[in-house]
Image 1 (cartoon, protein in one colour):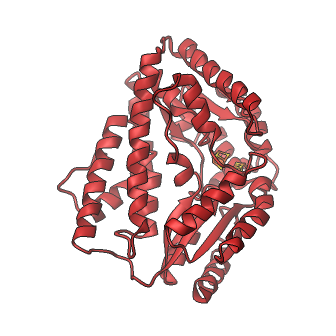
Image 2 (cartoon, protein in one colour):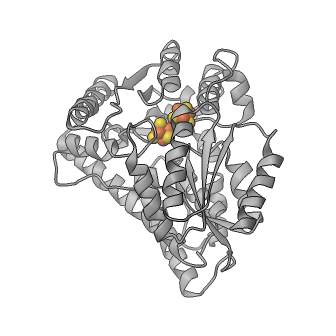
Length: 385
Ligand code: BJ8
């Protein structure tokens, strides 16, 4: 779907908006060309290892109520919608990414996901990495072994040998991508920023559905230059007095439509996503001077997800972001039955209170039935800021 310099920013945003659909239409042809594909579920998956094994990786977290209905044929109703949708879509053979993947890679993150992988293993080749939930030296050593085992598993599966040099090359490319994503995110520190939260989300989400790493990087470089031009020419779709909101919590892909447009129509602007579509995905680089396996393990282990215990880093990161992005409010998105993020709302609320920033928790699922109620609550929140 490559973009080019002659495109306007709005054309570029539209292209990224359609990136998932575009890849869904093309993934079968990619697969038939002989390319290996790994389906992944989580930001903890060390994608450099997959890349170094000459395979593409793609997130297969499904969204939408239809996919949830499929999932509920096999899984309990009171389970996180992301798990139900992802399993349901895959089991019904409707997810083109899972269907065309050679392997599914999961991690022992939350209980629902790890039990779902057992069921998925009945119809796909599933490799589950043991992700420890305490951040300690012992955990890091376990995780380093898991990263090494993933490399060996992929070598055996795809009949390749991954050298340290190939891993280092992948590390450099992924670091470059992260730096560019960070640069794009940094534009949101400006008042007003050169894009709104819908456009930022389109870039962050769409970027995950571009297979070719070099194309992905050169596209991001074009976007950075375009955004610089907007700043220079003082072009912004955002009112300078718009209330600046940070979204934190569970992955927001499946609930984006109910939340982000409602915030921005009510006079707010989403300046950052402290979640797996946003900063969790590209903060922190892999140390290019360390042993590649150890360096990869360290970077991924540091992700401040609620499945870690304790998870003080998320509070620290959020407080730092509130300062940097001059946030007026924080909205904590919790998917129904996601216990770890739900319990953590108490800590996140306290962290926001400590820096005098209004906070709201929003528990929802992938249905549209609560869209009106959410809109009303968001309007009231923005109005009181
Ligand atoms: S790194 S946020 S992608 S685990 S599936 S924990 S919403 S109950 S997705 Fe996640 Fe990795 Fe963490 Fe990110 Fe809750 Fe649902 Fe579990 Fe979920």
